[in-house]
Length: 142
Image (cartoon, rainbow, N blue to C red):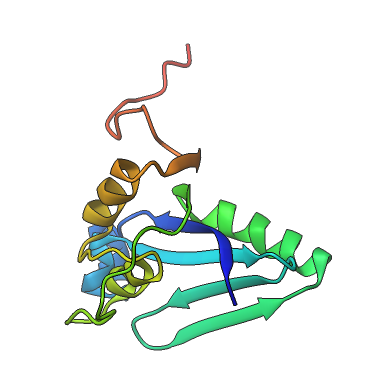
């Protein structure tokens, strides 16, 4: 299966309040998931979670539309990228959501922010999210 374009969804890091309510301490770094499509319009969705990994492969247009809408709701930022050069051994310890997603496009990364920066240096396109705005910038609604 040859993927034409990859998409990476970056979730916002968990707040201290989220952690108090049961979120993993590791989620304070954020979370990354991936999806893409092949030449025959087969879509795959890959979510390497801490407790389990989810992989969904589908041809169904309505299901793809529903999943994409859900991903864009969940993710603070979505980047689109073509595959980069692969590294010879696609294994990077410790394995986490970032190392697994980065391996899909031949990159090595450990943190969501580091992975995002590497993608942007490799001509990734921001198609949804906060690019160009400071995270601390507040709305100026009067």
